Image (cartoon, rainbow, N blue to C red; front, side):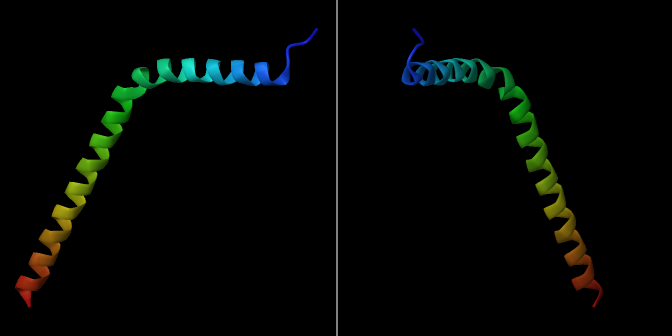
Length: 60
């Protein structure tokens, strides 16, 4: 006899949750490095924009 659809679905959900709990810690460092990189790009872009505005405003 085949297992019921509900049991197969529950098993699939349980396996997905177990795989996810292993996957997240392995990728945490990569995610944090991407976040830091984005923050640095944002700060750099903002600083350059402020410098350009300061130069443009000062030359008028």
